[in-house]
Image 1 (cartoon, rainbow, N blue to C red):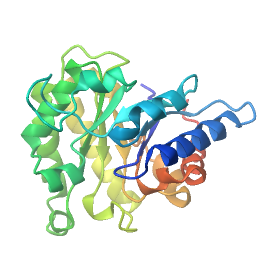
Image 2 (cartoon, one colour; image 1 turned 180 degrees about the vertical axis):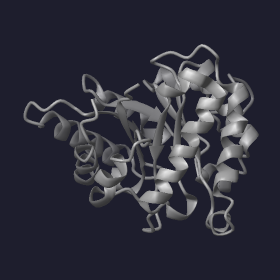
Image 3 (tube, rainbow, N blue to C red; image 1 turned 135 degrees about the vertical axis):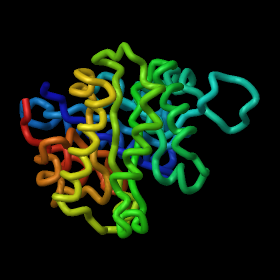
Length: 260
């Protein structure tokens, strides 16, 4: 099955409302000036929570979709500082990032909590983008596939058995040692991990795994995006720093091959 490529911009904790407006406007304008070329991928922007409503308004009428950077596993209640999936939908989100390595490291989110958050995203009608990846220490001791296998296995019991085209599983492989460091995973390393993930998902979900998209993140730039996106089991990218500059983000989108 051919899967439409997906490019997600994770703005992390960057930007006030004014800069978020400017960045969103630049991306929308750039995509609108493609001289009749069709967009080769789906595009999602994930700004900070304080800018979600503003960016939603700037994206109105465009092909770009909105996503959150995190969500609570709870539906509502006494959870100060948390944002639930229904709240994200209320400001226009249709996607949400779950289990980013920075959340795992900074907030102590383990595989079980990430799985529950993914389940909450499905419950609340959001498309979860679940992050997996190994640290440098885990890579150097040869535990990469073991770590990622465990992260994926934790998700399996929480994935609905009746997935749809609009709500299925997206997994983003982000080697922790390559996020914002300028270090790049080699193409063979990316190919190995993505192939491993595809096989594990096929074992767990059978034919449904063919619809599940596998993204790569970790210092993706215009210079290396084309090579990465050309790999067989890479279905797009989760872009961090390069998504904060409209010209760079647009160049990454332009590097998406016409797979359809």
